[in-house]
Structure formats: C-alpha cells, structure tokens
Length: 293
Image: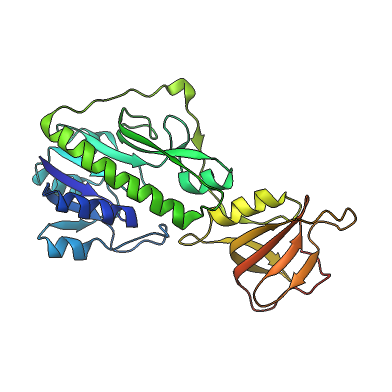
C-alpha cells in the first residue's frame, strides 16, 4: 500500500514515524516550511531526509501543482493528519482508497475547529480520537477508527495533546493492516447528531473575573502551552496566563475582579463564586492587592 502523507504538526510527525516503524510504504510527504497558524508546528523534513522520502512544501494543498506532484507518486491512499485547510474534490478522489483524516473529537459531535481547546474550555469529561474518510464537508465522512478517552480535571492542553497522540498511534497500528488487507470497516456518521465548533478568536481567550472560577480554570488550561495562553488586561496591557488553580473564597462582600494576593509567583483574584490563583504568567508590572482587574 502506497501512502502520500499530509501534515505539519507534532502529531503529524509522530504518525509519520509510526508508519515508518511499521515499514509502510510512504511515497511522499506534503508539509509546510513554516507556519504562523499552528502553535504545534513541527518540521517534518528531517524525518523525510533520514528515510529517503520525497517531500514538497505546500501553501495551497488544492493547487494544481500539488495535485500533480501527489498524482505522480501513484498513492493507493492519502493520510491527512494535522492540516488546517479543507481538501477539495479532485484531491479527495485522487487515490483509489481515498483520504483518511484525523479529528480528536467524538464524531459526529464537535466537528470543526480547535477540538481539544473547546473540549477543555467547555469542561467536557470525555471525547474521542477519530480517523475518518474525508469528504468535502467538515469532518463528516465515514469513520474508520474511533476510540474514547477521558478528560480529567487535571488535564491541560499539553497533557491532553499527549494523551490523544498516544491513543492515535495505537489506532494507526490497528487500522493500517486492515486497510492493507481490505478488512477495514466504514461506519457512516449520524449527521442529525452533529454540531460544528467555530474558529476560536482572540476574544475567546480573555479572562473575565465575573466568570465562575471553574470557567476561568477551564479557559486557562485549554489555552496553556503549546497554545497561546489565556489573558487578562491590566493597565491596557495583556497579561498572558498558562496555569490556574481554583481557590475557595466564600466572603460575600468582595466584588469580582478584586486582587486578593499578588506576588512574583502568583496572583489571587476574586471571581463570581470564589477566587482563582493564576501563575506561570507573563507580565512586566504586577497588579497590586486591592486593585481591580
């Protein structure tokens, strides 16, 4: 089975290495030279050089020169793991077995953008790692492999990314032999049960201390490294925060947003229903106790 591989993030690199370890024939790689969009961007070219795999840097995956390059590799199937733009009809139908994509959500639920970030920000307790046959719609193709995973209260973006990556590698070990032998199964999605998550904007990362402590905690862990971090504004400057802890504070006459403690290690701020301790932050000037955020 001849595979053309499309990807440009940390999970892409792990998946490519897994295929190489499995001695699967990867006949070409489409990737990016750099990315200002993907916080988890990884250069795949060293892996290609080490294993004599031809590669091409791509801006528009649907461009005719890209399609011609892929077609020249005569793939039986295309794997697209970690790519931020949709594939169009010509590319989707180029290989006999089609294109397999990856989405870390329990499809048909939670199609769309930033599935791990939204899962943490919304406080979901579980989700799934899903490989599916791509169509022209958003994450709506037949499922090839889906495995559930638990989201703990202690998970942040990095730990969840690692958890999903490890699970996805185990799935690849299972479904690639099934694709090679023709024993794989396709399970149609129930489209009436689907929802689509929107693209996250900068506003979505703003901490409003009128929010409940749990909501702030979820927001901070959702945007923790390798992502951009949540932030609040102090004296017209953004302070980026990567870690938080919920603190009990039942004092009824303290307003939301009041700074209760402030050190170089942490800041404690009153929230709607308690308090939040913020640490691992980037700021030049610390808020003072008694000030409001």
